[in-house]
Length: 420
Image (cartoon, rainbow, N blue to C red; front, side, top):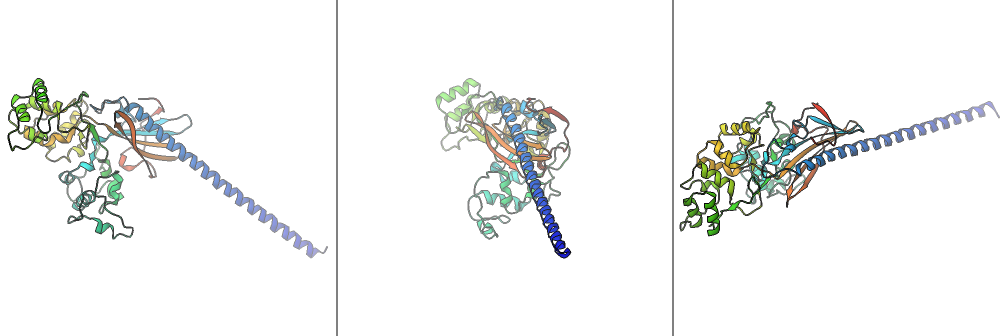
């Protein structure tokens, strides 16, 4: 064989070897990528499992909660430390952080009035667009939007014309964006920006819910007396035995011909004979609905100052006084009325916004495994006397959601699975 031929064979062999090495490199790289993908998926799964474990721990604690009287002194309020600053570690190196929030400490958008929305740091176009989205009819407000607007979008859709299902549905509404909902606003053309106790500006998402409600019963868990409409003689006797003023009971039992029905504390507290004692008795014992649940009320024991300040006709000084009282808490609406110092007329106008109870909570959970995190929000509550998960939403955020207001670092580390 000639030297020239041998040279060709050597070159071909080298090329073949180079090709094999390149193929091996590709296979190794491909396998590494697959391995990295498997490991990343495993970390994600474990992070989700950690977040789920936090929700389960919250459920275990909430199952023993007295929904008739909910305060910041309850065990659920201590879970996760202060605003999620405790870390719970598992032996395998995974961990979770958590916080439980009383849904009645937030503004339920499905029951917020226009007057309440206008007391929030919202522009008029946001208020109008929100109301147009949730209310029936096709006539848009001046700064609002109905189907004619949404149908003309590149990806058309219709306005809801009904209650929101989730808070993040707001981003579908004209003049609302993820930035305006989830990031702290930098300015307001109407009212001062809402802030937390440390002075940090709060994003709107930190104030809102669509799930809050409270049991329509007394703080002690007993049934309230429904006095809507004309009360029966038997109900009238029960009211008198409670110490309700005879004149008030007579008005409820035998309303004057043509008189307006008593359907709220606003009209009830306008009646002659109302004093502080009568206010307390009525607030602790009567209702105007046969429903077992009252949605949208705000818990005076857990609501923040920005939430309280959104209530129309609530004096600013009283809002601050309510927050100052929360470390001790109000044991009933009657006790709140006794300490408020408000006239019966003013009290009647605002009291229907309030409760001292709650049947729903929001569990914020963040699981972490090998640098991969998973945030989720679970809505849990008592329905038909059973505590259950109402909904669970895995959040696609790069880390802990900013609107939770958690510090990046934790103050303490606990062993996971130990109830605090």
